[in-house]
Amino acid sequence: MRKVFVGLSGGVDSAVSAALLKEQGYEVVGAFIKIWSPEFLECTWREDRLDAMRVCATLGIPFREIDLSREYREEVVGDMIEQYRQGITPNPDVLCNRRIKFGAFSRWALTQGAEMIATGHYARIEKRGNIFSLLAGKDATKDQSYFLYRLGQEDLARTLFPIGEYEKGEVRALARKFDLPVAVKPDSQGLCFAGDISMPEFLARFISLGKGPIINEHGERIGEHDGAALYTIGQRHGLHIARSSSQSSELLRRSESGPYFVIRVDTASNTVFVSSRHGDALAHEATLRDTHWIEGETPDLPLHAEAVPRYHAVRAAVTISDGGDSMRACFTDPQLLSPGQSLVFYEGERCLGGGIVDARE
Image 1 (cartoon, rainbow, N blue to C red):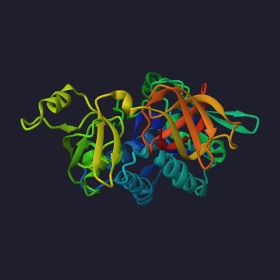
Image 2 (cartoon, helix red, strand yellow):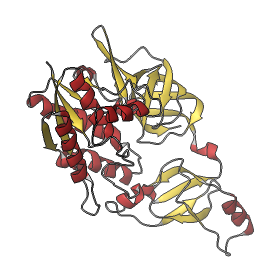
Image 3 (cartoon, helix red, strand yellow):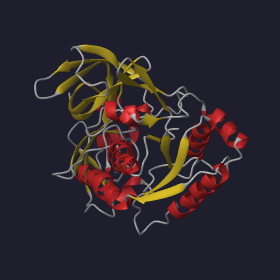
């Protein structure tokens, strides 16, 4: 009987994962991961921990917990804040999976006697010969393979995704079947450490912000922003476009024609550049850094595949080629590409890997 540590979040997906594994004959241990939460927010971790304990009691499995709040604060939140300070928009969920769940938690579980770990991600693992592949979850609306693209062969060899073959509605039905206490608990929304406040409100606590100019595609100052670090390419909300009587009639006409889209952010000069043309926010090409291939070696290049430039975006045809010091992604149709965001590659159901957008062209 193989011992599996299931990362329990206090939610329904991880709870059903634990129940399915027990039903399949694994020796299951429920493990709650405590992450960092800022003091200025009302955090739900205590309630989530209690729910995880209730799930373990219902299933008759051991409950364990590990405090990774320091690691989370330094390696996920700290990294995210620093990138925003530079005008880069990272994805903290990708960082959390690589450094916390499949990093510190996985290493700890193995020292505690686990042979494998499991999580409630909507993704699947397929073994072909000696190669492990990451596949998209069956539920396309919940697929989380995008957040897992930095996993490698060792990670996949010791990981289980029990609910990857199920639709979300089926998972809820299983929770009722197993009589789990979280069967009707709502899904969590937003970033786990930010609670109910917006990202700009959260970042304002850590980044020194100052108002600065909003410049349109004609080089004209048309408004004022709250801090360049708070904005990302393609954004159209939160822009304070001036409509004062002192404006020229032409500038007033342009500023009221809206909407405007962020096309560039310069944190050094604290300037946000916008355009009334959505196409100006799009790009055909991007250079990538930290490119990672799940199945090991870099595939033959150029590679014709599909790519997802941000979570839940529609897949787009892309060609990945060697750019010398970096990889280069060229899209058939222009895409919204933001520096710091992950560009994840797919071939059918297989997630091949991905990289981080470094620059767009």
